[in-house]
Image 1 (cartoon, rainbow, N blue to C red):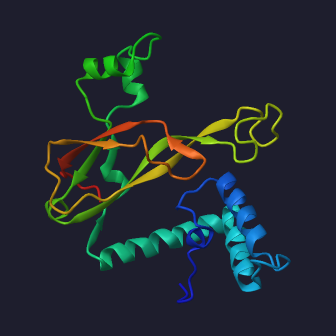
Image 2: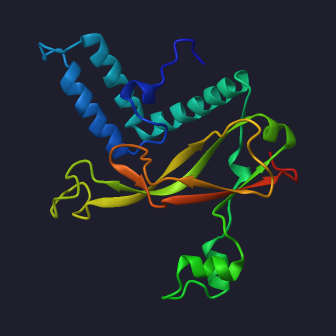
Length: 222
């Protein structure tokens, strides 16, 4: 990996995992500002940097390679700063649709709170931590379903070619959670308020409240 590595998400002012639509929209905004033809705010060096980042993140293969390097560098950065990066194998959804179906809890008319009552599970996510992680600072990237407004029509054009007139679409983003060191206790459930948090200007999490249960790690998974 080159020492002159560029964080293309930071150049465009986006979070890791941003949607292709958000990347395209952000590039267009920055291109208008920094294009050399703009006599007031134009800057060729900045524009070329923005263009380079857009070209990397807009091409699936190049973005995939960059994302792999991005994750490696972030992991090294967290280790250097004494942060425990929790692997996806220890961030677990509490219930699965298959289990609900097996118990007949996906029938029309059964509400989410009723499903929780039948299963006895009142949390959404389980995070399994090692003793040293409980004492230090952790960083957990929790994948959650989001609803994204179409950046082209802003949800107002029934004939929009980008979203097919739907105005929005489902996707997912990572909720980045890093609580205070030593604040987590095994067995407790922590409530995270997502109502005012947006991954980007076009996106919001479908869940308003996320309940996270902390458990002591037991097993062979990393």
